[in-house]
Image (cartoon, rainbow, N blue to C red; front, side, top):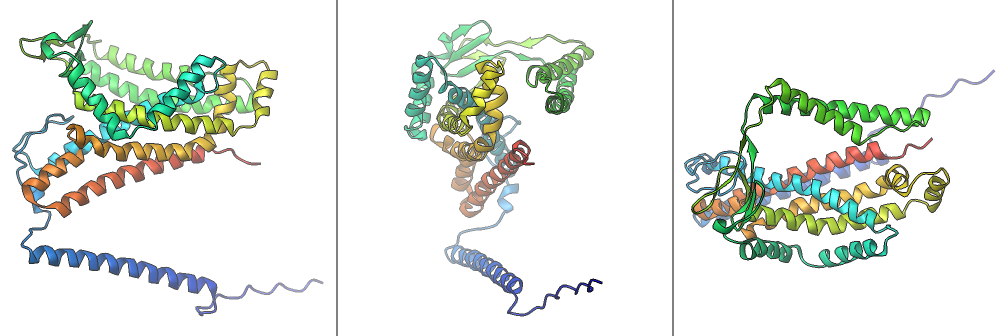
Length: 392
């Protein structure tokens, strides 16, 4: 007859307990950090008061008194500072989001191109990487800005390609006249993206269960576009466009992208894509050579091998350093102040010059970049967990 098992020993709050000592050390570390932060804050406030420097956040409710040359949301000089910072933040996010998308596409194409059988393609991809990643990003931004503002013609002599105009004033293009059809199309596109997500997951599970491959790119894209088209049709299928026209002094009507925005977006995309290409190349090289040989033995083409075999396995290596490049792109967008793009740093500099609230404005800048970086990291970590290979 087996003896009854003895109850596990109870944990005592004793210094001999390793868990208790670890808890005490952590509490002491948190207390030291908190006291240090309080000391720095109090010391800063005391020194500012001694020198007659105003402090506080009340200035955010005051009238900004300056215009912003480019913004997604409407802004008037009489509006408060907090709205000016909101405009600057949206301008920063505008560049960061578009830059991440374009950088991913361009960097992936160049990284895959490094494995092309065509020597010319491999050489061009290698030359691109070595050229753009070894030139400081600030110089590249200035180069693109000078290209857009010095080489291109003036607005009265703009280059025209169909309804598009390109000049020193920027890129002008037609935009839809907003109506019910566009609203329903936007809702349809959102619904289509959700349905496409579920379809892609179903196709992947079916492939793993039966081996029958279904399109995980074109079919989901077709679903999203079809839903958008249905919404557009239900809204009356409006086709009216606000087209740009050549005015006496400038291009009028339509939509426009300023030279500052195009220079910043193009510079950050081209620069960061060189690093992303190396990340993709390293990830693909980390996959065992036998995987591509097995795919070839099964009759898969090189394109199918890369898309269905190599890249999915390389993701576990690609995603972590890719996250770093996305964060670098977002933080490098602060260099926009060098070419006059009104991002959150530019707005903060103007607010500092007018109000003298340097500590508060710098704190806002830090908060914006900290929030965007943490949000990007959370999304990429979530995607990394989904893309990880599950061990049996």
